[in-house]
Amino acid sequence: MKVNKKNNRRVMLLGIANIILILAITLLRINNIELDTISYFVLHTCTEITYILLLVYLINILQYANEKISVQTPFNIYLGLAFIKFILGFLYTSNAGGVTMAIAMLNICIVVYLIICSFKIENEKVASGYKLFCIVLLLNMLVKIAIPFVVTISPNMLPSRYLGVMDIIEVGAILYIIRSCSNLLRTNEISTVNSDI
Image (cartoon, rainbow, N blue to C red; front, side):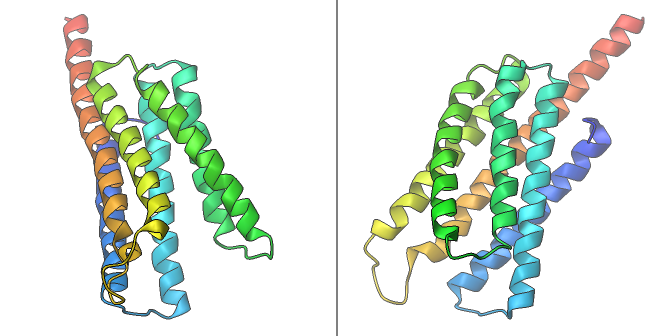
């Protein structure tokens, strides 16, 4: 997907749709509303596909900003892991727990790598957004790891029901990057017009 104003608006709407989907799933969990398998599958699949498309656009922004391949690589790996997790969601095998645990461990390493590389982004217009996104990713992961160890306040209130809030913050960081990209597009447009004069 080419980075331009029109696609930027489309991806911004895609991010908002992703937030709405996450919010819907979170509200269903909080209110103990059980969906039939097909409805939950469709809702969850749409959420995952929109998230993967957002990640693809983040990589395209890095390419548009002429960032080094060494900066783009961890984002590509993270995208690949997100896609593998999405595919594994469809497959249920007896050793899925081991594979899921291995991917989770690899995911932690990649997120740390992402944070390090986010501080190497040279384009100032998008650098802060990528740093924010990577830090939120790490915090999201740490919260999800810590949840099983948290003592529940009451049997009716399980903290895992509220994990969608962290995912919404993560997508919010992506939307911040896309917003920063629109400023980058505007600046490049102005510099192109000035160079033509």
